Amino acid sequence: MKPTFPMLIDRVQSMVIDFIIIVVLMYGLSQVLGKLDNVSPQWIHIVLFFTIWFLYEPFFVWLGCTPGQYVKKLRVRKETDINHHINFIQSLMRYVIKMLLGWVSFFTIDQNQEKRAIHDFVSESVMIKL
Image (cartoon, rainbow, N blue to C red; front, side, top):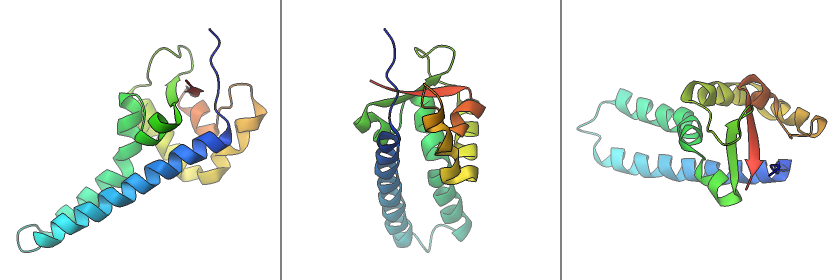
């Protein structure tokens, strides 16, 4: 069976869902940590916020998909075998390139049949739509 590749709008919508979840997580965490101000040092707050922001997507992609990708029925897979997830290093590399390039990374989506962004090429991944 030939895979279906998502349009840019599907990818953007899944990113918006994930962004909203990250904001809610950060808000919830700030509320909990606010009540523990006398107990936890400030550096713990900083580490937790960076952990949520920078490991959310790589961690979930490594497990299969982010919540936003789940809702939009998108999955990140290995370029050479779409039946397998990418590993954590690939997922982290994919996310770092995606963050460094921003929207520029998506300029290649309409230039190839698999709708791959620059960060997909670098991490040897492909996004499919179920």
